[in-house]
Image (cartoon, rainbow, N blue to C red; front, side, top):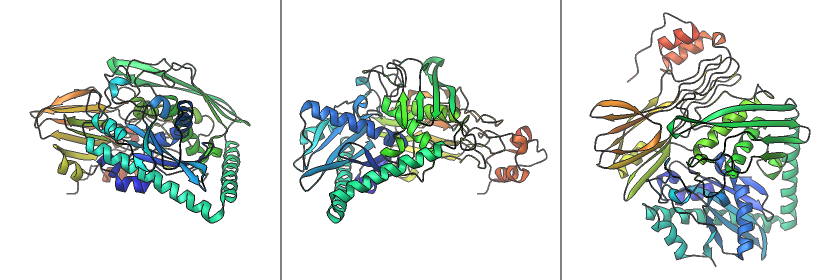
Length: 535
């Protein structure tokens, strides 16, 4: 399904970055299987599918053979407006046997800025085009009205049409494969296999939970709202023989800015962290998550009410939630939990009246027992690739003038955090709108068990050769030759830096991940020289 979506899509964000996800469900809406795509998409899909089916039943929308529905209202489908969910019923022998569903990030759906994620939005409607579930296909044919609604609200209408058709292709692929399985083995065997898989995942998860310390473990972290305001996130994780209870009581209330995260996003963070700790050898299906219970007060940042905006909650608040949960679980299973990651998707949106570009930029992962953090990679709730520079410069008035690891950004530790990256964008045309939405500008990614914090995010505007620091959340008008330089955060370190092996420090120095001054200040190794960079 995922390959079909990628291959048929039009936009670089899906075709190159693979900012999409796919899953299969049984006729009751229980998750059967998912692709290894985007955690924040995948964790919200069961919640969104359940809401979508309920909506269709209330509104008399029959999910007959040959039909598909599309929805992007986050309060129904989860995540944010850019993520369009497409659901198709799967039939075999004239009977409903399940659902194929996928979610893909559309680079632009209107709104105040190209890319549709503006930190200035005060309502959901200000973020762009919003639709409750509507038919995308009926009787095997696309509905022109639905296609027109999506395309007419976008600065890049042809991309929207191509990406929606690609999403339909993904679901058709999934439906064909399920129908083939049932035709080969029979419906009864198919259902028995699904139940056996649910039971296996449930039993395996319970076994892994036994390795965790029982009790209640709490954590607190902060999100950075515009204007220098800190927003508090709190969690209490109760681990017992009956499963895991996650309670977000004490988290600050919803905001009139798009940092709110709908409940589907909050659930996805919990599912991701539990899966990471329990082991990815457990099949990711309904059984793996059946013993997890999550509560968040209605009207808090992690369970807002419409029409509060949520565009950045899916990409930034979700990341903070993952770090928050890892910090809580570190009291129960310290040998498995990492220090904080760079903690941001570092969203970059660039565009004009008739074009739009969107991508996210990697960070450093936190160190963990026995392993350094990975350098310059997407972390936690996202799993995309970068946009190839050649693709950007071939089709858009953008040049990338710098792209490298951010030296000295990792948190020192026995196992260091990963380095962030530096990525610089130059406008080659006039009147280019540049929006950046990043986190960890004020609150550094924390180290764990004696490890030191990673370096914070920094964004620079370079005009006529002179640079100045700008807020990491904002929209800026660029003229020809202006550059924006995004320095992403490094991951926190794990364990006492004094216990790091000298040969590992020398290797980091040789790779230009750290400088000689950093080695001296953090590891007490003086007299080392930074080798010249290889050309």
